[in-house]
Image 1 (cartoon, helix red, strand yellow):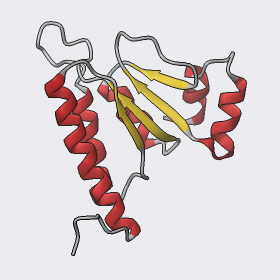
Image 2 (spheres, one colour; image 1 turned 90 degrees about the vertical axis):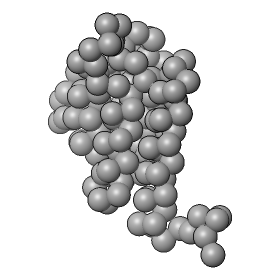
Image 3 (cartoon, one colour; image 1 turned 180 degrees about the vertical axis):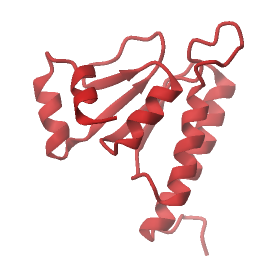
Length: 137
C-alpha cells in the first residue's frame, strides 16, 4: 500500500492523527469487518487488505478481530488469525518491524490463536533486537 492509499483511507477530519503518524507517532491498523473504527485508527475489513497495508511499513500498531465477514463459514475474506500468522512469519524472517498489538475479537478460540501467533512474533522481534525473554537462562 502506498502513501496515497493510506491518505485516501485516513480520516480527513483527523489531520492531527495523520501528521503524528508521519512524524514518529506511527499508524494504527484496525482490522474488523463490522465494528466502527476508533478515532486515530485506519480501518481494514479483510485479511488481504490488512496484509497489503502492513507491507507498506507505515503501521506500528494493530488491533485484531478474528471473524471477518465469514458468516457462512467460507473464509473467503481470511481471518484475523491469518493476518497474525503472516506477521509471525515476517517477524521470524526479520521483514516487518515490531508492532504493538491488541485483540478486540469476541471469538475466544480466534482470540487465543491470534495471541499465540503474536506472542511468537514478539519472541522473534526480541531475538532480532537482542532482548532476552525472562524465561531464558
